[in-house]
Length: 138
Ligand SMILES: [Cu+2]
Image (cartoon, rainbow, N blue to C red; front, side):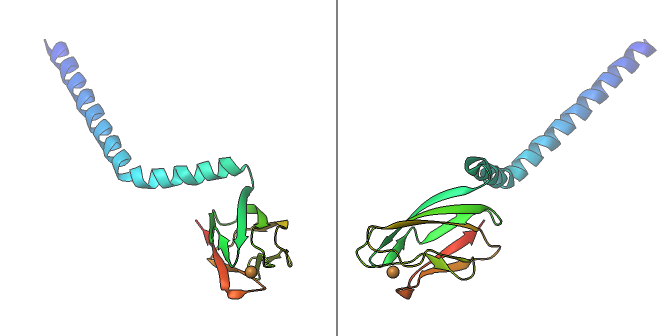
């Protein structure tokens, strides 16, 4: 009888312990859900790019499309730049250290740069601040 009740108590204790652990884990999962998701999408971004992201960017008369490039800080990004306008444009950033030089309408160029740690402006050197965009580290 003593043995049996000890065993039963032990079983109960283990069950209670397991229930507490499970509940705690469940709570943690819920609490981390948002963080976990954002970490996951960052990981996925890294996987998609396989050590370097590739982005297509188009110049219109006179704007960039997209005007915002976001990627993890420190990631190497290759931009296939196409001038879809008829004016000459450049895709340039002093901060991030790239410059396509002047690309005539219909022309294209490719630049590779490392996503900076801070938001960094890119501009068209022909049209200046009025034709600009932003590199956004994630
Ligand atoms: Cu321009």
